[in-house]
Amino acid sequence: MMYSKFAVLLSLLFAFNVALSSHAASTKLSRDVNYEKGLNWIKENNKWGKNAVVVNEFKEELDSAVGKKNAVWKVGWGITRSGKAYEVKWTPEGIFFTQISPVQAQRLGYEEYSTICTIK
Image (cartoon, rainbow, N blue to C red):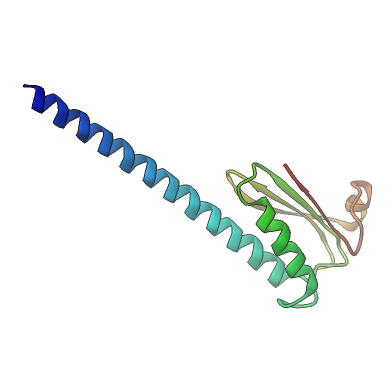
């Protein structure tokens, strides 16, 4: 009788451990996908190309954002190929890109040739 209770307990612990590992892997995969999405976005949308200084700077800030709850980049309209400013948000739910007109961006404190990053 004692052996069967031990076996059940061991099975439950194993199942719990597998569930935790699966959740951690899923979270890491999601974070990796969002990281790549952010990095690809800056490579494709800056006006100087994928090897530009702004890409390296964004990558360093993105590296710092991994593991944090939130990060926000104010990307100036002089940096993007479209001539539009962007707000890039990193959250536990994903990474999001919002286009903002230069006039609105100026009102919100964006600078034409600047990327302002805040990480929390």
